[in-house]
Length: 219
Image (cartoon, rainbow, N blue to C red; front, side):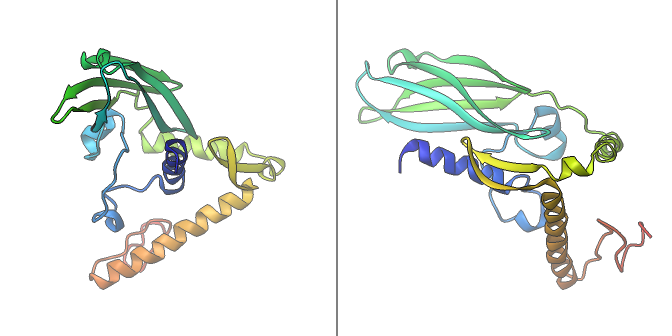
């Protein structure tokens, strides 16, 4: 498998699995790698805003190496971003360098340095930090904007196609109203899972999408 195909596979998993959280009950035993949140959000949500990668590199000093960031930017939509970080000979990359990365709403800083290790193998050290602006976090504001968007939506628009694309290729396509229906069905599916787990633990079921037997908040 080529490096490019591996990259597309990883990005597709990001499309398919996001927004699962390490803090979710069903994922507490699952390790989430590579998701970086805006620093101001990460500080209060116990999520990561930076990461450090170390990659072994072997070759003569004049060998050239290009380093590129490929990621998914999650905002009002999912966007694939590919940004060049550095390019040069192994000798040139021994000097530490910091690069400010910008693409759309994405703001990040990358720090890169090639360190000599044993037996002629070097280690490429890359640190990434998400410096994006946090945007609206107030729940009532977000709910109000969502309701306004739904109220302004027409039946004609809901019949238009919605596409999920990876690397420019469409992997799923359906009318928008079908995707909205499937989303609610998917939420109900996971609520059913959660209800079973909570009952097995003797815990109460919260009123997430409406009243439950234990919580009549929405009744």
